[in-house]
Image (cartoon, rainbow, N blue to C red; front, top):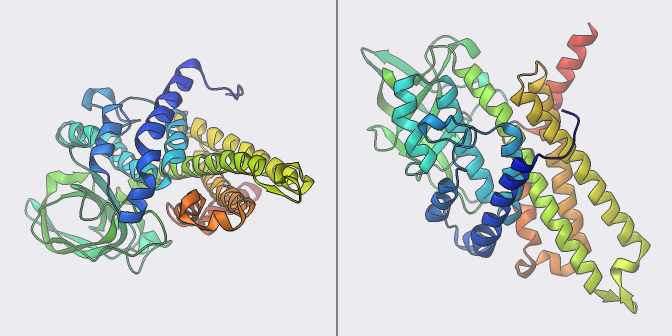
Length: 382
């Protein structure tokens, strides 16, 4: 693993994503943010490049790549638009969970359309009363012959109302993780509805709302994995999702660092460019150093997940906690270096700041990431 340089193939994949972000995401990101546009056609262009099923098997339309390649892709996409990159990450997570845990019929029924983004996917775990304590979720799926009948609600669901495939974690058994199963609910199913669109600080290019189930009847054949395996499937999906969102933070930070360097070389105060002041130079140096440290942690976690390392979950938690904290701090310092101009929409830095703030909350809060790491440390010491 210790090479620290992407292979030629990995560099080509990153370049593909970089070119797409520059041509298709960056020019429209401000408009999507301002007008709350879910960019369906642009997302399908990303899918045409293989970015909607990055680590889904090729026999169902996926790209068959690894988590390290995905990290490279999401860093580049987030440079263009962190909000849209994050939705692509969530869609990939849904596709992978069906690929990894679904049977052959399910894989061939759902994944070709997900990998082309003919249909969009949403991940439904969080509820109004269960966020960090995900195992206490209360959405139920009652068996009735060859169907499940779902009742309950999911909160803060990216893609809600627009997506076609909702992978829902629901209770088919008793309390705790072992009573949770994963069931696909398709848009248009009777008893499925959506709450109002949430008014958010950022992530305006993807819809977010509650997903509501009221006597929602779904065939048993839509259950992914066995009954009681849903929580395990959800947590495995989140390992990859945490690495992806960490990579999105890297991309936003890298873009804002680049913009800060350019701005400080042009902006003049007290008779010289502000880049000539030692304070500015120290700030830029710290931003670059912390970005490289975060990138190393993200790549390490991705490598461990690709290779099935026993500590991959802890590595993903470390990477997510560090990269999202550092990424947001770098964006914030880039805004500070822009002064008042950083606070206005004309310079886009404020959009990156709004879009990256949520990275420290979703896919498990950074406080939960610390708990995951601490529990492993204390278990090893006992």
